[in-house]
Image (cartoon, rainbow, N blue to C red; front, side, top):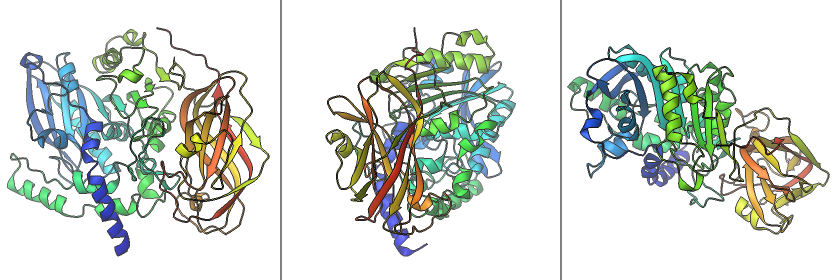
Length: 554
């Protein structure tokens, strides 16, 4: 790796350190302190579960008598918002879920991810070792004399990602998972068709960060460099753990494969794309995601959800919220029309306690909030797309500064020298768009590299526009996502840009507009080659469109 690349990685790392408190806050929100009677009949204990890659620190509430199903959370964050809390007011053993479910007859367990917190070994950034260690913890909990052998997992963000990773290994005693705003593909967390993500949000108003929150260099610096200071460890184990954390622990590999140097979708990232193995899941699934989540974007849930086996009890709750936990308390601006806490309780009681499935009969398997703020009970994933073909050719010159905010604020149908615009006919009746779409075009770039970034707008009769979705693509990877190649200046190529999945309703009298540019500088890091001319022909838009029915009735 070049000195220049290493220097750039260090500079970006320093910028990302400031985001660590935000990550911890987004990942898990500790619950209020609970009265002592809530834990009557339970004892707090801890252990180290041995795995092939290091021993995992597990802390748990177990019943003094009898047996109980176990609700497990695994996280790299616990010491950040608990053990290192200078106020001493946060008790990481008494969060919302322990306060709620221990009194309901559940055991509650917490585990630090491999190589983080009190756990030994090297942190694996969403890799196979991390998943295997998670499965080992599940099976250890199932084998305890105080456990019924039914294990469920719950948690948000990275705490949701480890559930997907573990579930694809199908450990025999994992009965249910509740992944909230999870990452299912670490490549697609960092990139979109080899374009580096920005963590920004167009219509919600979150500040631009310039680089995505949670990239490998941030995790390597902050999460996996905190030595295990557990006073109960032997001096030998403590010394070994400190040595692990002081060593590189594959940190260079993580960073090199991260967003700075190499956006190739090769074996490193394919190992960390758990949507490729979603068909192996055997546990019941209750997913939660926000259509406006600008951190773990909704494409993360979509890729995994659509690949799950059809025979599972799989459920999903989708609303127009950001990165949050709606089972502990839904945001006021996007409150589901059901009691989400009771939905979760019924789901866990059925799958972990063996109660009658009729408990779930009043809760829809699918509940999704469209852009019209109407809740519906279907999420069709195999719709035949509607395609519009645009006959007009166009050209533009990449400025490196275009954004969807610029696009939506232009007068309807207006283009600039840095973009090209096409419009569909007006919709005669309302239509629901649900899922990902595509923009295809024959494209030529007068340079050796370039991006083609597409934005889809909903335009009302007055010309006012709002952003529905967008897609980013680095043209060097259009033939092979694992191996870039230089473009031949002026050579025409067929390119298809995938648009992020949405659940949106286009009203009668509105039309869609497609904007193509060489950058989308708010959502993706722009291509550095500005001033290059693009020519476009045979442009098409394909979107999965259905009716606006299937409205949820209380």
